[in-house]
Image (cartoon, rainbow, N blue to C red; front, top):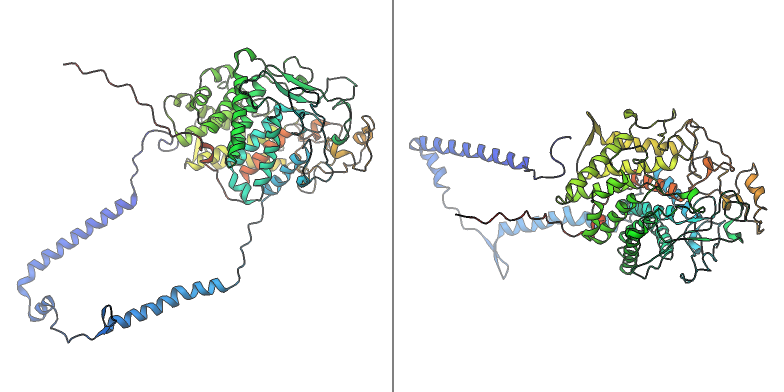
Length: 623
């Protein structure tokens, strides 16, 4: 590592100013000693003049005094006092009076950088995806109320499953990626709240998070402490059917009149673990609203207990034709680590950090295997995010025994993950245009890039906050600038610094996709209701969408940096909640309009003081 022990052990800190002072004092001592010796040596050679210097001046004339009643003051001192007051007035008071009376001109805030502009747009995508009864302030003119009958036939949910977000260009509510998107928004807000406040988006992003968490609290019995089911999805379709449903029909969400089945699960630690993470992270965001924060924590504990139930351990999507082809989960031990970490930060309960650092989790999730799939954050794999979140605990609070061994391994793996993102180490393929291929060159690469850019940028901010200048990848020292450059290069690619000079965020820049694969954006709001198949003409037209879905990050180009702006090809032109959440997080970490760095302490508000555990007492002494 680079100089010193940055995360453990005591380092003796010597103040260089103290050294300097002590040196100066010793010089003074020498000088005074020398002068005393000199004086002693010459005292018997003094003439009358020199003696008069030592004995002092002859007696002066009596001073004149001014009687102020309560005190007697010499006239000279009185003059000097008056003069000092006059000078003080001119020097101190007069400028203050002048400054206060001159009308104020507020200094203009710095112009927003590209990342701020893109962030403000990227958040609007979530407004366009809202389901349910929309507030007047939603701000998307072509969207209205929709999905008001969702889940109305469920006996266990009063008022149905109204609200939440549509996932992508379809009208389905997939609760797994929706929960993940909410966790990511909360994480970015907890780390960078000062940036959101400065650019005027703090209340907006809180509103978006609450819209999601209010809905998630409806999907299970959040007033109970023990549950046996969770509603995992509303709407969707089975592959290959021509029944009217979310995928066969091309309909505005406001005009849906077909059946929208609800998928309910009796087991699924992955979905429940991610929901727990989303609710726990949001409880930190809303810590200023005590009642709501407690409600979120209670819900998080309840779904996490469901996740940990030994009899419910199979993936939420297994064997379900409505879920498996779309958001299939490959495992749940990463969600155990992720959910436990968030619950520890939200509650300070040691049982959660003990679970998060239990050696069984990395063993079953293969967290330390460093396979390309394990080191890429996405809606299915939370490992790199969970390990970075726990590395945060080690870097800032350094809790030591009994967590240190596992935290050190998480920290080392996180560092290796960052190394793998750098082109010089050839872990991943890169396109000629400069895009890292984190999903094996398959479609929709941008969401993986945005997530990696966020993790890398956040890791840089963690190290910066502790004055660590970099890290090592094998024999190579990597400065923080090198890792930050990875993040900026990937986000810049998304925003238009690519061979096609195409911005992949709708509404950002001048050249961006105009044929986004999105039902609501592609059908005009002309007071006509288009039937399930009546909307096909809008799906198939070569004309641009009548509505730009501002801020939507599309799937992105292929591994040759080529992109086809075609509505029918969702691989290129479909945006998703999970993708945009990663983009928002990356942009928040990179914008410098509102300053630099993270909020180190808010994350740990609920974490109790960490006292190192005492070693066992020595054996009794025997003579």
